Length: 279
Ligand code: AMP
Image 1 (tube, rainbow, N blue to C red):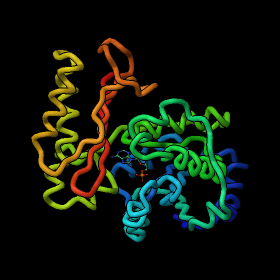
Image 2 (image 1 turned 90 degrees about the vertical axis):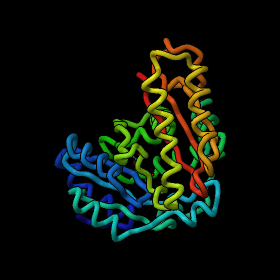
Image 3 (image 1 turned 180 degrees about the vertical axis):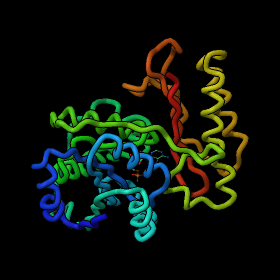
C-alpha cells in the first residue's frame, strides 16, 4: 500500500492506471477507521481494479472548533487497518495541500441542505461538498463510495455531482453496527462507559420504528420513539423524524415512497447520528 501526501504525487501514481483503462475507486474518510469504513473498501474492491482511501479531517465542515480539535486521529492504527483491508493507496494530505489559499465556496445544494444536520451544523454540507469536490478532482475516480450512516451527506454529494455534471458513479453502502445495535462511528471512541450504554437508545428507537412501521401511525411511532429518549438520562435529542428520503421533509403518510427515520442526539459530550431505511 502506498501512502501519499500530495495531489501531484497522487496524480502521477494514478496516471498510468488510467492510461491502462483500469477502474479506480475512491473512499473518502476522516480516519479513526472502523469496520464501517472497511466495508466501503471491500465494496470498492468488488467494482474496481484499484482503491484509493483518503484520510483528511476537513476543517471547513466543522462548525465547532472544539469538535475539530478533539476529532480522533489514530494514524498508525488507520494505516494498518487499510493494509489489512487490501487498500492500494492511502491519500493523507496536510491541510495546506487541500487549502493552499483562503477560498470561498458556495453551491446550491437545494432545500434539503438546511434541514436536520444542516440546521444543527450550519454550513456543514458546503464544507463537505467543498472537500469531496477537491478529492474527486485529485483522484478522478470511476466510482466513489459513501456510507448510508450519513444519509443526508450522500444526498448532498449527489446534488454536488449533478451540479458539476461530474461523471463519477456514487455508491452508498449499508450501515455497519456493533453487535448491540450501535452504529459504528469514529466518535464512539469519545463515549464514556456510561454514555456507551445510553447510546443504545438511538438504534433501539430506530429498530422500534422499523418493527412497528406496518402497525402504527407515523404520529404514534414518533411519540413512542421520543418517549424512549426521555427515559434515558444524559441523552439530549436534536431531532427524530420520519422523512421523505429525497426531500428530507417530515412524512405525513406511510404510503409515501423512500421513507427513512433519522435521529441525532448528544450522548454526554458526544453527538451521534443514525438512521433506518423504511423501504
Ligand atoms: P467519516 O470518516 O466518518 O467521514 O466516514 C467516512 C465514510 O464512512 C462516510 O461515507 C461514512 O458514511 C462511512 N461510514 C461511517 N460510519 C459507517 C458505518 N457505521 N457503516 C457504514 N459506513 C460508515
